[in-house]
Image (tube, rainbow, N blue to C red; front, side, top):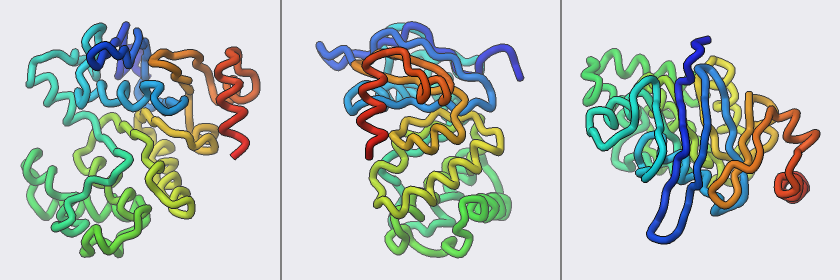
Length: 247
């Protein structure tokens, strides 16, 4: 493992007008690590993960991704975005394109891959997420869980070094959550560097190397899943876990 973190955040702050959404967050993520960020709604988790590929602009502090600092320089932003795949709560698939077209669009247009190569990669990824038979369907004909797995395959098609997941199961019906988490667990076990914002504590327990508890824009506590579950240090963490683990 490289001694230098692949993602390095120092003193990251973000405001929306007078609202201080992120208050001095420091995080290091090393290659191949799976980091889970959890905490109550409105705690800044999603805002923070979106600063890593500049979907949200941080106003103070430094964010360095794979040696490139996130600045106003558009070239830096583009470089970081090609290294970073992202999966959102909503699937954001193009409804008028087939699953295959959704996945091959960026590799063909951005990476200039020949269509044959892009389609072969897409089929490999659809196999990985367990839905190769859906390749020629349109997103509207798929369940939510299948659409989210297509979104994961689409993000992976650009061969990113890092995958960011922003509450990827929160818009799904309960019976579809497992199939998406299973695809993410396989990805984590393949060695992908991942930051996952989620309430899915079983997933965190199985694959996270470290967990960060966010509240009111700050990191309140961090530790391994074992430390967080068995022996949380902060009262706020204990309260949150007691509420979430009852469900």
